[in-house]
Image (cartoon, rainbow, N blue to C red):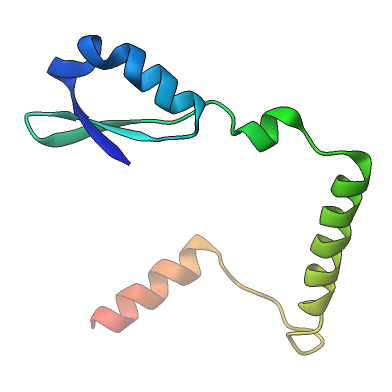
Length: 95
């Protein structure tokens, strides 16, 4: 990621646009402090899209990976990720 000062933004715009097209990212700074990230809209691979076969291979790989995680927890396990539980545990830990 390349840093660019806001003062240089207008002068560097042609270079930035060309670099964005090739996938480069930029960090926009003002007075040395980061204020924004400039990211390419789409990577060339996403822009071109996947063929049906490539898409199917990726989906199959995702399914296999998800299935490998299916039996990680014992039967009846319920994840309690409610806000009350999380903050309650924090309060108890601080006491």
